[in-house]
Length: 404
Image (cartoon, rainbow, N blue to C red; front, top):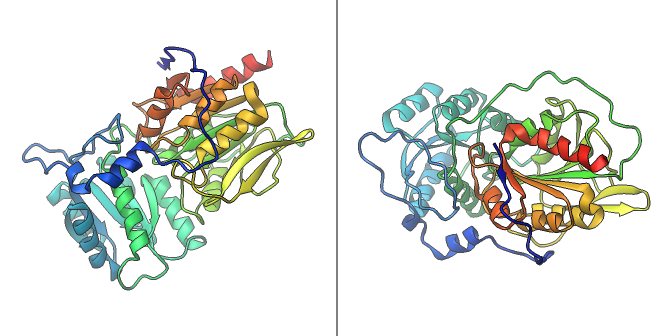
């Protein structure tokens, strides 16, 4: 059952177009990381990360294993122990060695070299065992590294982190810092009951030959979002209104994500380019490291890419996309915020709701990380919290009522 909205949206307009850090980001900057971690429990611990309802809730996950055959793994382990005060229990390059580490130490977070195909099966098995898994890639984003990253995400990895362009030497400070941020998120992930499924065969249905300016569905997601997006989009028919998606993902990986998604759902999926028109039965995925907006130009609705500072801590920003949809479509838009850390999308969803649009957020039970949906609901942007498997039906119901 979905959670209904308690009251109507307040008559306030959030500020858009400026860089806004989430409360969680500000809290993390002020508070030492070690203070946010409980000591490891003794006896009876399953090692399964707990779900949270607040991004600032302390967590108790401390054990990390690294599955990596590169020379950078040892340096990476030292960095993680120093910066996060975690117990890095070991480094292994062979699948059986990794499995022994996981069994012996009740590991909570596994960091896997996604470009080593021998290690890919560990991602799925670790996820099924309740171990939060992060995929790292050492090659430049795009090409084989992007394919490896997307395969890891499809197998159940929570997120993908580029560590740099070389497989030798110490990890670059920036990329090591990004991995540390992702581990913070992974320690808060809910993995129990997470549904992973093999994509169904693609039944190609041609998209409508004419552009659609009648309505639009805008979707935003972060951690755990690749599977949530695939589930949601997979439940939409080829007659659905155009969909525009922002998935927080490193630049260079979004194109491959769109290509893989296109092969697993019935609607057509494309990597968005500046000026692309919106069409029924077609999904546009925002490119990495650039904002994406929807605009009307005469009788045609299009997407526009734009540089600029991060908004709500991200580029592309869900807030930017949804705020533009509120301006261009008003009540003819539908907004959805899926699983993810932080609060990107909360203000944009509120702008949509204030413009008369229908707005939904994924419920806690089906979210890997409930931060973004919770923020959208508490901000009065989401009219209700809906289980992932029911979202498509709610969207299509809203479309039908809007058309009546």
